[in-house]
Length: 367
Image (tube, rainbow, N blue to C red; front, side, top):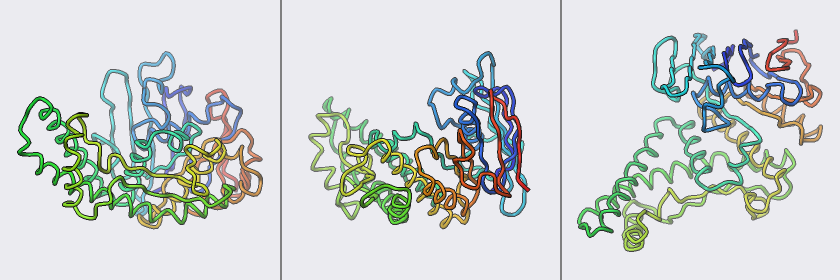
């Protein structure tokens, strides 16, 4: 799946923009504040119908505008063209269309490319709370095996039901139905845990390799740390039963996959706690690149990779390694303040976008 064209209206600093992406590397370059990251965010917004930078989507609206829209043109492996449209106006439901037909969401829509994004703000994925990493891991599972998305939803629904039951028990309700809900939660919990473990197993070796190539010193390890050691739903249900009194006192379920952790480690220590910001940055980049390679292998096509300001903290050799790795698989959009920081940025076949003042001043694909 290739992204061919991006059109935006009233998005962030852009009154309007219309750019074409190349099939390989596209480099958006310009000074700080020129609008490069906004362009990258618009592309992500058009492919997913959500922002990669903020949960308050009013922020994507250009000052003074009442609504914004993003259109993305893609071409699938069979050569068919697709049009994705996302319109946003505060206080109203998003308007989402695929090939002109309204849809509720883009995540399962045909014609939508998978997207992976690196932003400096995403360091929270490494150094933030475990919930962020669990959510990210579940998104990877869905990307690898789309039909497994229901496992997370079923587990969440069962967890909500059990927590509601705990609330009734605190008020003197009957415990008669607890065992049934424990087994239901455990059944989905074991499936969810196994999906996560399988996904981490697919990327762990790649993570270690890429982290070393990019300059993360020491032994880099990606480790899935499930809360439960149960091997069957019955065993997990028994663990839940053992904790029932404590759960009732607290009013929520304290045990299960919703408390699991994904640990990024260097020499046995977690980057979240002991890594410098530079090391955390390398760990995040290694994670995203490892996932991209696994997705390419499993799905037959790599995600569109969006890299914002990633070159500035790498030396020349590692910039070269990074560019070689990302361009070997498929499309990649890189933003930089200095075109010279992207090895081969002026090579034949590379698309270059010069950005200034919230406008794309030129679009050049080297011959």
